[in-house]
Image 1 (spheres, rainbow over the protein chains, first blue to last red):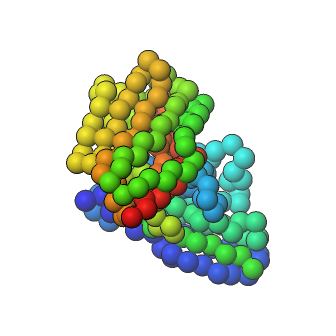
Image 2 (cartoon, one colour; image 1 turned 90 degrees about the horizontal axis):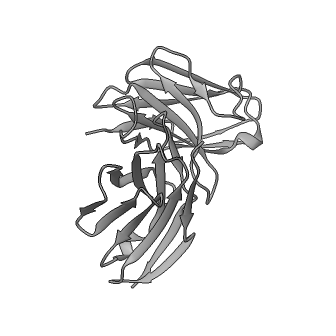
Image 3 (cartoon, rainbow over the protein chains, first blue to last red; image 1 turned 60 degrees about the vertical axis):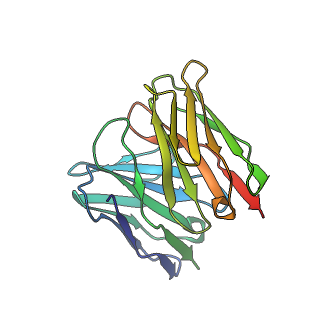
Length: 117
Length: 111
């Protein structure tokens, strides 16, 4: 159990385009989903926490108008990178957690490699 | 906020030997410590986790130890195999349930 699906796996697009990434929990309901960004040979950097039915909480330095997050249901969260530029190129990974609070494992999606030309 | 430090950054071991990765954390309120394995271009996979009410946990060749007083925790891999080669991340859960990751350790197991 605890399967998280992320789509698309790879996106190449022109500068100025908006890109939507979907994160789905396939066999459980996720009260909380997280969005991370990972640069090559670096660790995972948390961008925002997404709770179903409420506004996402963004980490310091992450522009909420640039990275729009919607958590419309207990199985789906989306990240939209608006007006993407080359510096937004990165590996974006979502994770989902079944229950709230501490001590709960996060299960990761396969990630989306975003390349902006 | 929570700060997690991880060492070493790279670790090369002979097949069959043991590998140890160490992490320290700063927030004494943290009570959940997972370890993830990430192969190149793939998702991080949870390999073992430990909660603060436990000092040690073992799963076959993998074990994790936690010292709450010293605020450090370690991953031990015994009888390493080539398929253990990957990047390993430790993490600590802060009071909001968010994970703070260490910088990662590149483990290379040579036959």
